[in-house]
Amino acid sequence: MYRVKQLETTVNLASFSRWLNGQGVTHRITEEGEFQVLWLEDPAHAEPVLSALDRFMAEPEIRDAVDRQNRSPVFVGGRWQPSPRHAPLVLGIIVFAVAMVWLTAMGQNELAASLMMIDPRDYDWSTMAGRIEALTATLTSGQIWRLLTPDFLHFSWTHIIFNSVMLWFLGSQIEWFDGRARLIALFVITSLISNGLQYFVSGPLFGGLSGVVYGILGYCWLSQRSAPRFQFPPALVTFAVAWMVIGFTPLPEMIGLGRMANEAHLGGFVAGLALAVVLPVRRRRDA
Image (cartoon, rainbow, N blue to C red; front, side):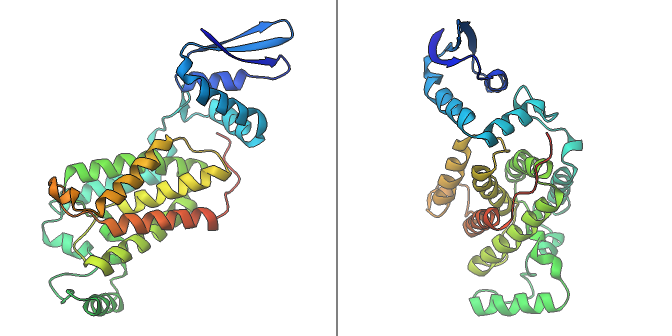
């Protein structure tokens, strides 16, 4: 064990110790007279643990978040592990999306056309003017659902699996901590912006929940900075942004992934960031 920090015994480290256990950090706290000493098995953990400890001691909201996480029925061993009853709305969205993959034959049959922003067989959408005219005609005919239903079009099993995993991991936390109304608002607004931007740039031949996932990720990341409550690795944001940037290059097509819905990713992410600023954080559920 490596000695990394000495503190007065008046500092209560019990909840911080439980949090470290949940993060898989092997440690020990001993008493030496009027002091307590934090020991770590792996010295490589010293810098991040000391940084977390400094925030734990200096910021009451961090201590509150750690205490809630330690008591939460959806944090098992300090890790976010919800059951379906904790996030039924997210589960319903995922089940519906998976059903649409089967019913649309992965976007290959006539039902798929009814889920796109416009029916690509009925209009000339090769120009911006044509896309605007086609969308206007579609919406004035009452087909309002088309603004959201591209979210439920997926063109491969890897596409739907990746989106479902990310939506469950992040969306379930929003539903639990911020409520279903907040999740619905995020879903609708990020869908409208991501789908609309992608449609006007490339036309109706796109689909997937990726824009919503990027929006939820942006919301979680920025909102978390002012009111810590979500659990996800910071590297996830770095990876997602890097992947979005790569999507604007020829690389995905060169390696056989096809053209990505880059504008939907970007629009969703920016919308999520904006919503984190605009929407106040509600009083959080006692975890």
